[in-house]
Amino acid sequence: MKKYKVVLLSGDGIGPEISEVSKKILKKVSRKYSFEIEINEQLFGGIAYEKKGFPAPEETLDQCKISDAVLLACVGDIKYDSLPRELRPESGLLKLRSALNLFANIRPVKIRKSLIGSSTLKKEIVENVDLVVVRELIGGIYFGNPRGHITNTKVPKAFNTMVYDASEIERITNIAIKIANQRNKKICSVDKSNVLEVSQLWRDTVSNITSKDKNLSFSNMYVDNAAMQLVRDPSQFDVILTSNLFGDILSDLAAMLTGSIGMLPSASLNNNGPGVFEPVHGSAPDIAGKNIANPIAMLLSASMMLKIGLNESEAAENIENAIDRVLSRGFRTADLNNGSCQILSCSEIGEKIINEI
Image (cartoon, rainbow, N blue to C red):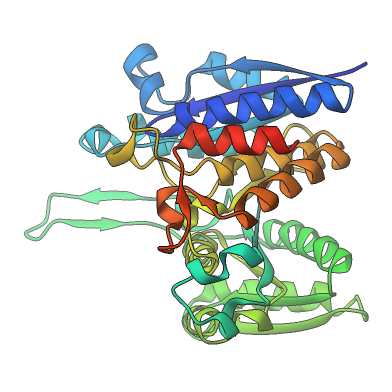
């Protein structure tokens, strides 16, 4: 029997609730498809700071490095916002990405037919949405130096540095090309090259690499226009390739096309070693502990983990089909309420999905 080691980072807020559902799903599907998943739970985020003094303890990072995959729920809470920057949960997330060299973030955005009515946009705008955002994850302004505050001036100032080198752009472009060739061979690279020098390098580098693949349909778009186009005509996109900052913003915007940010998974990958699979949504501390969170994005992240990280595609497809069947029968969590469905708790909808596997 095949055995896999998975590190589970439940994190903060609603993380433990949605993680509990994911553990049950993975247990059920692994038994059905005759493989074993050893789940190793580790402290991460705000809870790790409270118990260990750091949001990404070395013990947690070491366990992640020797795993087959990492499944992460969510981190963060407003109560940690007053901490020094390096002790905040979000800094732990950046440290994890850097430690595992997770340079590629893959965020699929696909409308589920049973949820078309949940989108705030018209049906005809969203009904054919099926795109992937490929975001560079460990470069750009989030990691650039120098950075900091200037306090010895009359007016306090702060600064960050947006920087990329050509090799960082090349490797994320190659990931986008690989994904595009598995889909519809269409890439739109998003930048701000009319203003930013770093975006000029991005555009030149991406254009040079993609020009070598004659089967690709390739285009460039400024980030402000891309944001507008995602709302105006999102089905025009297939693979969106972009930098760390722009990808962070655009992928959250794209998430809302589906009706809820609680519906989208993501994968953060490197060229070798374990990937991190996590929902796009945040920790939602305002509803933590109330058993009303939507666990589906984390379940879809678990499905991505099975498919991409563990090569268990049949099991992954089973999870997604089970989710679709439950949604098609009108069962929802509160965030997907359209006024004509049956609202279930986090654990209840989890049980419905488990019963469909």
